[in-house]
Image (cartoon, rainbow, N blue to C red; front, side, top):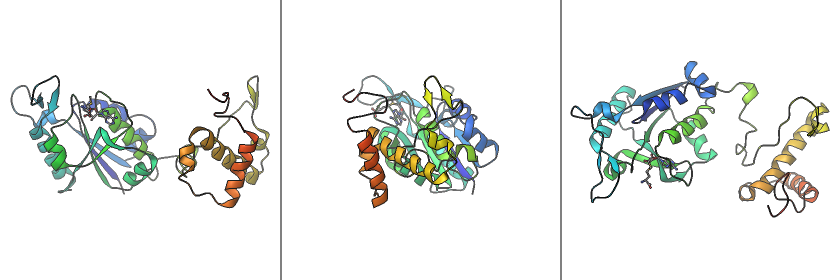
Length: 259
Ligand SMILES: C[S@@+](CC[C@H](N)C(=O)[O-])C[C@H]1O[C@@H](n2cnc3c(N)ncnc32)[C@H](O)[C@@H]1O
């Protein structure tokens, strides 16, 4: 299944350039994802192709107008054949994005993303044409393009056939509810330390055990909130306890407790 992503944005070149790079660029090139951009200005009236107007009630800032957005969405519906398609609005007021949400969105075959600018989008468009709002964090960006690019990247790398073995997502942070374990490469010996011996042992069971233990330990040290949401079996809990005994008093690897 090829995933289609339509992005409504006043800055299509931003989305176009960010989707040419890296893993998502590869997916795009291989035809595993289709990405189309739609500029509301192309659907606006008048010589100036005005897609925004002053905020009602006075005060600073402009608001993206309904009509150019409505026409852009109609064009997307016609081009994709998805007559009922609604948009996902990237917004600081939306549900905070996490890997579970990314995995859910990655299953869909069509997404319409709406990037806002200025003060945002006329509320009536949000009420009628937006199915959900997603935030990439509790801070305010000047536009939704970066947020859309974040979402496209996270979703794109989960599409079948996109990742090579070398950048497999299976052990990435959050894929099993835990943070990823530390990684090392050559040289084996360095003035800043040696690669842990177990990783050079060739003993795959021992390596798996070490990785899981580090993963559990890191999550405990850095994101204890995540640990509370995963169900650990007896063996896994024992592994975590082993790590905890070895690291009692620490908050983050390499940092003193109380940092
Ligand atoms: C300056 S912001 C508007 C913020 C809006 N007045 C508010 O406070 O909710 C302009 C656009 O950036 C995008 N944006 C800003 N912060 C975001 C975030 N944390 N996550 C996703 N999109 C964001 C949205 O598309 C928004 O319409």
